[in-house]
Length: 308
Image (cartoon, rainbow, N blue to C red):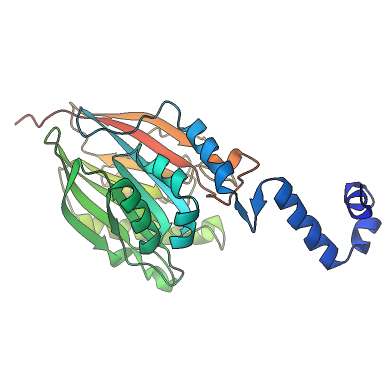
């Protein structure tokens, strides 16, 4: 064992402080190499088998049948480079969803994944950091309309907030129709309480823009608040939306806490929404947060043809 590794393994803080910065950086690079991580990103060949392992039981979706697989995932600064590097893993994930709502993406990166899956995609206007919200859509779902809600940006003068994106959908297999809105609300950076009013106002603006409707609708994505214990989502609840699995406290972010979720309104009595699962790839120590610091959320929507 080298002197450098012996020093790091020692409990002596004096020895640790004597190491120079160059040596510490060298040790960090060596640790990352040994653990399958390079330049802050896990190796693609490490991620793929873990993704496949966690996706067991979630089949690749079909163009027929009476159920849809829905998902939501903050992909953490997806761009073209990241999409190309992890493309096999992204393809495995996407092909198991009829509809995947995603956050922190850019259009070139999402376009690459959509092409690999033969999916449609819809991307919002990004903020100055290249963060957009978007949908990946299986061919079974026909897009009737796409609307961006810019009312969620510029709230209280806060920069770099993201708009919401809505798509109205027709399921070609059953004739059922519904809408889905993906959101990525203000982060808790600045303090949970201090930023709460911003998220509250963003959702207040959203429900005002949606207006009164009796149609089956979903709002899903990264709400950046603790969904099992928050007042931030009160505007949605007052507008008739319900959080699925309300009391579930399973973390969806590596810092802990349920930040991501799905709200629904006007669920038809012959539809069933459930089978909620969280797949936290970051729990694998060889992957960490380099793939994403958020978990992949999935739900199953069982539906029947419209009963007029």
